[in-house]
Image (cartoon, rainbow, N blue to C red; front, side, top):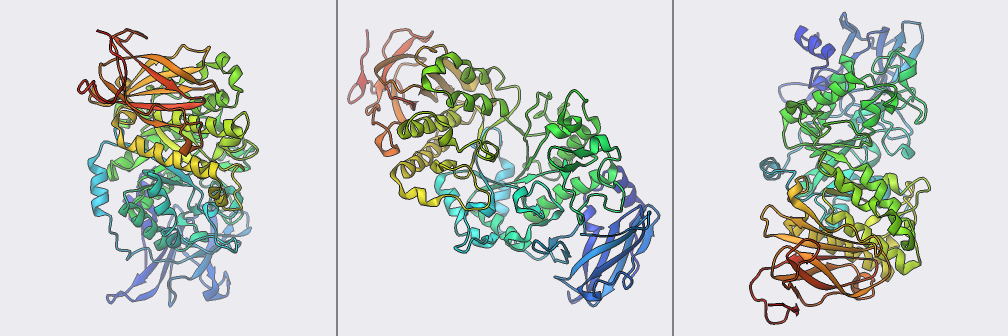
Length: 635
């Protein structure tokens, strides 16, 4: 069976504009009219190779048996092998221009052998029947920037394991992870890289099979089923994706045909010494076609809702160093990627994990930007954690660590991340970072999450953070689920569940996250008491919430703040309630404003402020100012 790529396909491939390269390269089942498998077509791009053959169990791994034909002078090799089918294990045997023989996994393989094996496997991706048409239609009809977004970041291998320590499969996690995420009220799951990778400890960030959902957790259709069931429960799935660098394992993309093919030719910018990885050359046409096709592949076959792109600073600048210079071809790749994704489905979102000040990162390509939808707010994360790690007695000297984030809050569209990076490698878990005794640690922890969920920006929380895991993340073990048997942790988890429900049900906490109209300080200057107060507004200016944060263990029976409107203010969440592990200083009845200006507002309210706490008040109305409400009114 002869096979040829069209001249147009090869032109687009070499220009970096072929968006379905996976249809041409890799291993593909050949079926007859009755849909019965007759054999497999193998196709690979290896321009520097002298000879390419396919080896596997079917030919006893003998490289002399099935030699591929060079079907295009640019370096495309192909061969049809009859009599084999799905699940066939194989590799490409490549004789390099230097006469060296190397064995490589298929860059476009749809499935891979389970580690420590490194072979590719023939797999039939077709045939899964999706049931998420209504979900996809609903996603496409919404404005994602004005909607609620709380992301639960997950490493599937260590979220929960089987009694013998082995991994749950994708389809098994449907019964555990999805109900758990739904019960907590998260809108999305972000899954750490799903591409095939040889080393568990790399968490997927050093991949070898970009088109192969890792076999650790089952087969690709099991993952399709998992995502389909997430969509059934209105939970979006964001895929952690790493287009910037690859691992150097011998069977992977590295020096694929004996020479730099997907990576840089120049050693000085190719080698990522700190990570032990190799940087992909995102200016090369074949690399761009490989990666852009890969993103489109995950959208088409797995219905992912978004991509979180890792280490964007390492893409924007050579070696992640702005002093070396902007990597303009890589920036153009990001723009092309965004354009291709949005052209295929405008509702699929792009998230940048980036610590730079590169301009217009979340501005659309059509408006001259890079094209991301969201950027992780690393500045907010670093400043906030630095503040909370300090003893409360010293916090008044670092007041600006909390207020400074609002200076640039609308320069991009931000995600507020408390991610895996902050609870690993000796950094401690969130609650263990907090100063003080156990009670104070948990009170600080609740206040930290209260700040995150009331501050402008969408939210991300790494697994274990929702029940105050004491140990930092242990990637070889499951989360410390036994902690939920202890009252402090069970109550901490109840607080997180209630906090997310309050967030989900009150538009002021999310609707204008990226609009200056959605936030106004009441008091950002009370550094002596380390108390912060601010307003969050919905699109309807009469729909707003008051947020008060006390960053010290001192409580205040009467604390006066200014408010913009006359009426009742109902406390809808107080982190110091006993049910959350607090000391039970809270405002039981709604408080009523009185006509006395304060903090440049025409009205005031007097409230109780609990120690180390966050309180959220909902403005009710001007009506029914008498009755059971607490407060006073001056004529």
